[in-house]
Image (cartoon, rainbow, N blue to C red):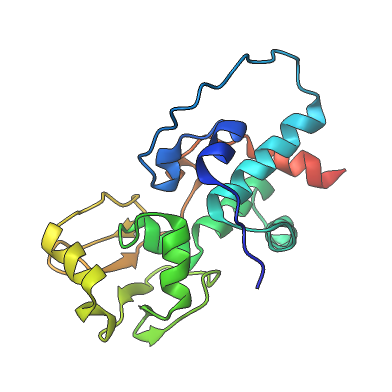
Length: 199
C-alpha cells in the first residue's frame, strides 16, 4: 500500500498550512530564509490548493482524482461535493471526534481495526460515513492503554456541528448531518482545484 511519508512541518510551510489543522502543536525553529515574492502562475495556484487538500487528508493522487470524478457526477457544486466526500472519510471522522491526535494516527488506528461503524468493525480509512452512522471504539480496543488514557484525561474536542459526541460516551460519536464547506477547519479555494481538473 502506498504511503505519504512527507515531513509534516516542512510541507506545512511550503503549502501555507497551520500545523494545528493536522493536529500538531509543534513549531519549527528553522528560519524560513528570504521569501521570494515572485507572482505565482494560475496553474501554480491551482496545483498548490490541490496539494494542500491532498496533504491534509493524506490522500494520494489516484484516490484524490477518483473523489473528484465522483463529485463531478453528483448534482451539487463539484467543489463542495469533493470536500464533503473527503470529510466523510472514516479516518477524518475519527480525528474530528477527538479519538486520534492527527489524521495520520486516525488512519493507522482504523487500519488496525480499532473502530466500528454501527457495531460492525471497519478497517478501511476511506470508508464513507452516512447520516445516523454511529462511529465508536471497538469493545476489545477500549481496554487498550491509548483509549483508557483518552477517557481518563477527559480530553473532549468540540466536534463540528455535523458530528455529535456525548460526554457520557466519550469513545463514540454520531453523524447527524452531511458536512458542508463551512465545517472545514482550514481555508481552501476549492474552485481552483475544480478548474485544474476541468482542463
